[in-house]
Length: 68
Image (cartoon, rainbow, N blue to C red; front, top):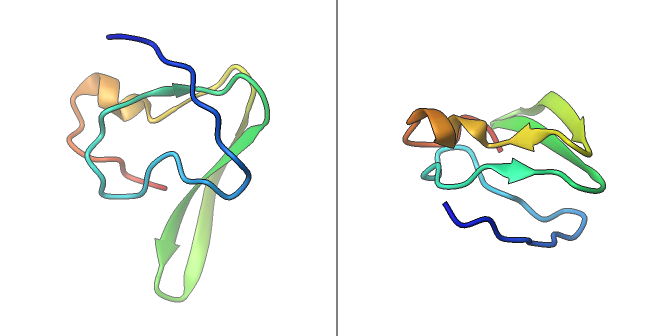
């Protein structure tokens, strides 16, 4: 694995539910909200801040991300 630094702007998506799980992200600054988008609602799963991981299912062989 080759670590890379990436910057995101407010409103950007790291990944979307159902996309192929290729990366895990370490939040260094700011915050990320993980959610499920359903036809009539958005369900917030977690609000993560600095020093948290998101997308870690890619480390355990999950073929896709299970949230956005």
